[in-house]
Length: 239
Image (cartoon, rainbow, N blue to C red; front, top):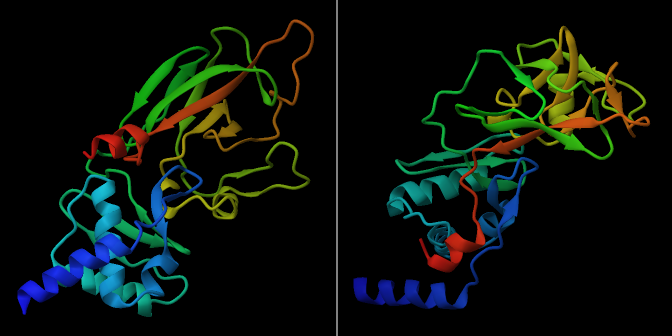
């Protein structure tokens, strides 16, 4: 009987295509919820195992996998079922199941200064820098020092080009930023003035410009996030 079941599982893996990878606005890799909830339980398990294998991970034991799939099926629309394993974490957000970034590294909570052309590696956040921009940038003097800080609650801004402003909390939700990223988004300040929210948008401010004036350079906040993404080299190597 066990041999028959193993053979059936192998056949399913050959017949069922590996689900396509989708990405959050922050770049987190994931697979569509429908891939796992509309398929029979055994087929959903095969799909998830196959997707994890392409990502370079071993799936958890059958009991843990089936329980996670069960939670995905019965959970309310706004619920966030989560599967934590030693090497990775999966969590549903809206209509996608995402592979979360490594959270073993403590997330930075201290503010620090950043100047034009400078690159800084921030624990739990990634690499941030101020780089030249052609349009939609910040008018900054060479070597001008700004401050990077993190969400404390109560912040408000008006995205450049938008008619009205809102709380940062509401804007992050509106931009579909997953919950696990919202406290990691670097906020760029000049004094008490919020200039940029990560690399997501510029705030309307005294330094925001849609185009540079004559002889003026523009700068933008660049953010290379710590994401364990599915890339072509990893898939090709089968790591």
